[in-house]
Image 1 (cartoon, rainbow, N blue to C red):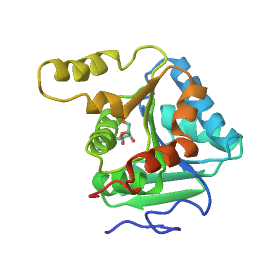
Image 2 (cartoon, rainbow, N blue to C red; image 1 turned 60 degrees about the horizontal axis):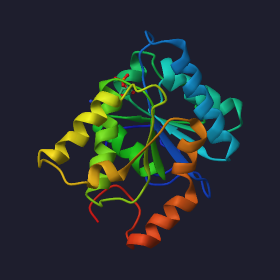
Image 3 (cartoon, helix red, strand yellow; image 1 turned 90 degrees about the horizontal axis):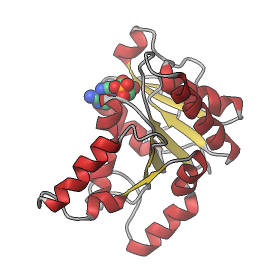
Image 4 (cartoon, rainbow, N blue to C red; image 1 turned 90 degrees about the vertical axis):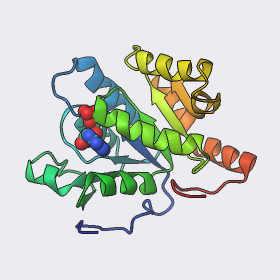
Length: 213
Ligand code: AMP
């Protein structure tokens, strides 16, 4: 392992709390409305009594979603590699900050700690995080909701490209069916909601967790 400051074991959210993992931008060069979006998502998570799981960064949308969640009273759980802590990128206000030895371990912990995954606008780091949980979901390796909130078409080119894979025979309809794309915060949180998880779990009899079934 080589990580540190674990206050709860990997694979658990705070008891009884539904946890949403939010993937989003870490760049400070983006337009302010993206920060407002992230803050609103954090507030929405808090309003539902859920926990936020994030990459534990304090910058940009990552900081805004965590600040929004805390402003609404939500518990925030950050998972961040040690190299980023050393560069002082960590969200030190997080209720739990789990420091990992590597990016891979960070992603695994974020996945294990969450009951649903919500992607907001972001760059290549967000892209990679999305593809990992999306492709695992499309392979039925987990049944957790994979949701994208894209109010302004930030991800349109990527989604069009993936949809085009079906027409060219590189993919079946599964990937596009597995990702729920919405344009407003309420719809995004509805798509993450626990009763949706329960419904999907009943529908296909699968178990929770990103990993081999
Ligand atoms: P970005 O979308 O590039 O602004 O990055 C958003 C988040 O993804 C940040 O927390 C980055 O640390 C993280 N990230 C960047 N590259 C990777 C990677 N290769 N694997 C996992 N996370 C990454």
